[in-house]
Length: 449
Image (cartoon, rainbow, N blue to C red; front, side):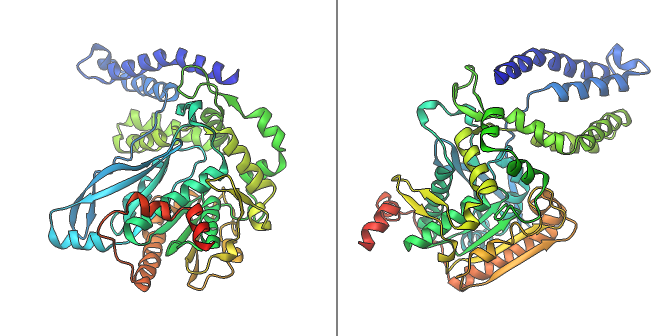
């Protein structure tokens, strides 16, 4: 019922938000009589703020049109490589007619960026993808809003997440011989599970695996986010945050953790910061500081755009990662694509180099939670590296100045080193459907038999 009430309230607010936007333009236009009033800038700023507080925020676009590679602007074409019911594997294909640059692009390693499915869209990693495109072929998991997925497309569980990641890894391996995987925040756990299962089956695992700011072991330095998940029971989450999608969406009837509730939780973590930010936006509009006002709009266009998460996936993540600690206890069984449970054994990973990244001031995944991956992957024969970024919060390790100046140089050097050590070279053509089938868990079991 809460979801329906929220949608009713949102529908009622929408025309008022549109009117506020029109009024802001009216008072800001010097050719309008309203724009000549002595208090016009203040009125315009007030209406502009009202519009942004009341508007509906849709999924932003990545908007990466070009990237600079050694002084050459390379065109970016964004396309979907694999379409799944709850996710799209999105590729940022690079194009240039400069022969030397083209040769360099072809030789660069392929990287799968696994974006978090924890409230915000994958576009939150826009800066991550844009920076990586200078030196890598970049693919990213673009998770869908569960309210847009019809019930006929089935359920989505944490096991499905793990299976998706394995399928995407195999897709890149079939194209390029091998690949590298980077996971940011929440997906560090399912990505580790995916690679562990591939290793246990004897499949080829990625050349390197970079884990950034994720709850591998949420018992270490628990944050407010961890404490909520650990101190409330499974039934509390099921009874208090799970609702059915209203009838005006394609996913009508699907049980979800609604995005608007998640957004409320995000804001509640630092309410004064958000209030001050909106007030600063109001003052910047009055002063005519367009650059600061635009920076505010860009940030909140992303921050306020949230998606619904399928209830099964969300509840299983709470239980597996934050309550049972199944990964670190070695008790996690994942059902593969055929429905057969397989035990997650990180100690079976041997040939994948491992890097972990943490922010010194991370208030979402506390100190030591990501570094714990090294304690689990005890059989890795290659390099294991840990980077703690001084002064960086959670978002600072994958976006902004610290990401570009501190984290990225270390990550790309790590990836390139292991690309060169493996002597990996791009494959000239895509693998056939027969090749892809041969990489499946069922085919692997048949080969072993």
